[in-house]
Image 1 (cartoon, rainbow, N blue to C red):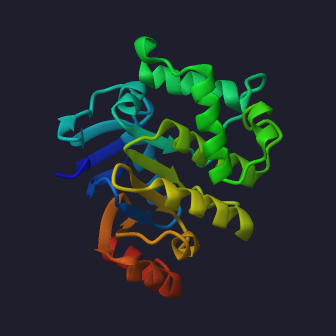
Image 2: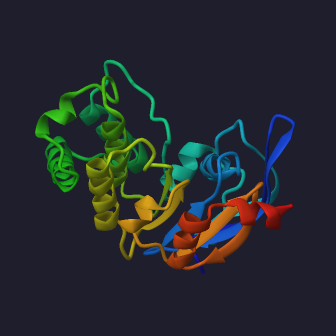
Length: 249
């Protein structure tokens, strides 16, 4: 049984249906890539999985470790093992990276199992070293004045500290230069393992040069139109999405 299972998911925003019957699975230790053109429903899938209230699930189910979580709030899903890295991370003025992450990890752990200051500092330094952050980064206000690459690396740092079972990465590669892309990919490769799976949502194939997917799904017009191995991503790079758009119609 896969840890994350999505069955026949239909999602609408206001009166517009975006996802039209999407099913997939992601298990611990796996990297599953979702590719598709702009407007195909990739980010809608990410937000719906995480429980964003704007995205209404009209049909289908989401299961985590066999439990139906379709009706749960976003924070409850996070506590059960889901994490979402945003495509456009928000600035939080006056809140340092360190304080934000300590609050987040304690929220996940609960009042009776809060992490000590010393243990948190050790954990944070370990994960920052993994992503090649300068130690002073922890004192900066979250995403305030960050470059695009720093914002994306900060998202991966959050995932590293929170240690979810399934990490959903929504176009984490967008806007990254080659050096930042390699650092982010290296961080993901170091984090994924027997206890963590990755749902990697991307428009381009280039991040898959550094993160090898176990499975690739092509999404067009709210549906998966083709699935395969890593070679499918190379096919998309060569031929584009045009033939897949024709299949969806």
